[in-house]
Length: 220
Image (cartoon, rainbow, N blue to C red; front, side, top):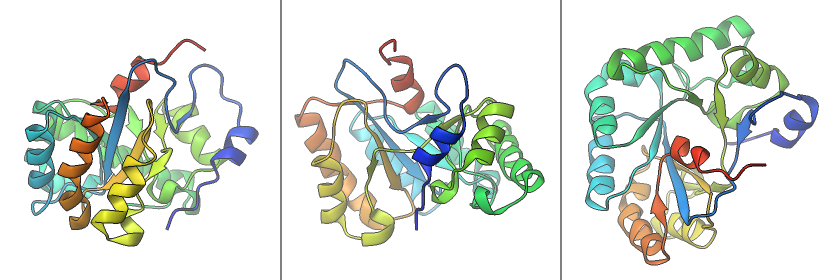
């Protein structure tokens, strides 16, 4: 499902200033950022938010614009409970396979839907399928000034659909500054989430949003 070309893109595209792409963060505290793609959905997003709230955890939700437009109240609740909203395009498009004009519509239409729901434009974007190349970086980061968020822990929930495997993939690979990729549309992930949160909390981890973790980065 995922075919990232991050290393090639980073080598080929030199963008001054802060990093264009974040796969993880260099931090001095035991913090971890859980991210959930592809929502919101009326069936599963409330369950996700209930679990996070019950465990005192915050996360970053990369939402699909057309779904956000249909369920703005779910974004409002997520933000009210301390979670962060990121851009996952309007229709879950692979940005490496479309024109710049189409890319602009995908990203900006989603940003408009998020702004309409929350009053804030997202500063983070995760291209669907982690479809990232030099043109995508230049547009998203170089032109729009967005932070592109990848991951260094892929739960593989989209592939396995198995709570035990999702738990193992996250808990055994956890490290301070990790960005964890999950999907809120996977029931097996939501079934695993309470145990994942408990296991990581027992290891001393605090759950923060991606932007919070970026702000904690050690100076380079």
